[in-house]
Length: 114
Length: 114
Image (cartoon, rainbow over all chains, first blue to last red):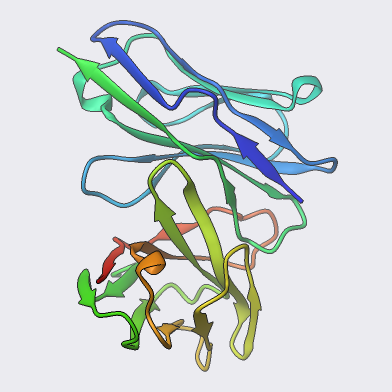
């Protein structure tokens, strides 16, 4: 069975600081990887995704993530966070031949202080 | 194009009551799924459907029923609500197109069971 671990449960940063959120998954086959963001009071929105090809993927709002197959990792990064990035971030995985349903990590709450 | 529509947005139930959370999508997506979101646990898959007439269980199916009589609708039924079912519920859909594992989420339904 697939599983996803997000090691940072709550991160507090000042504006302009750099961000890296960790995500590790366990699955032996080919995977599709995602980062979703949930702003306060809103539903989940796709931030970025990896299906194949270049392991460095760029998403919306200046976010990027790097897929490192040997480490089973898909860490999310942003060079300079803004107050508006305050949200909860979820890493998710599904097998490439999967059932179109995701396995989510427990989420990381990011608080950016002005 | 409304996307994924969930009703109601909020609901309070007493233990033992039954209710149905509605989910409808207008994108002609074959795949639909229900998740529950609980603090510190991310989103967990309850049930999913790969097409009209076909449903299957996810990680946490106990206490919930689903049906898929049409492509558009995927209601989630609680037959006898329990306090452990207090949660925020999200419905999601995605097309069958190969590799398109990107889910579109509804706005969520917050359920409290007293």
